[in-house]
Length: 157
Image 1 (cartoon, helix red, strand yellow):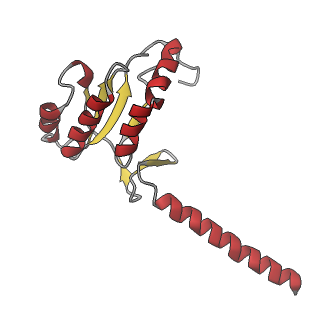
Image 2 (tube, helix red, strand yellow):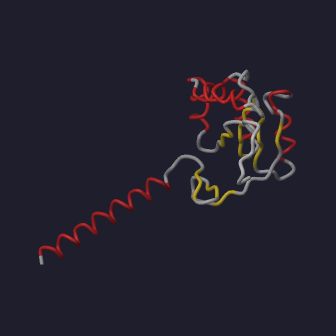
């Protein structure tokens, strides 16, 4: 009888623990990946459709460009950026993307085809001022750490 009681208590305990884990996951402030799909903070599957915009080499704020793209029905913009871009300008570009009800995906272009430049990208993403911008927008922001970093393709690709 003691063994059965112990097992029942453990089952109840584990069920409660797993329920809390699921609950915590549901409250995550931003996007998350489950399996091969992307989900928003409400648990809704998200399929991204929208253009790449060379924001860093054009209208850095994206204010006019993003408003025009929004008219196409796009729900996302891949914002091409460089490590020379300031936190202030990045914040503004992300803000203007969201102002037009689109999901910003910021991508660093500095290391395209150059694996040895990956540490430069990591330094940018982890700098305090950029982390602050990421945290400010984490609810609706996607980060593409680097565009096609490296020049090699694996056998499985």
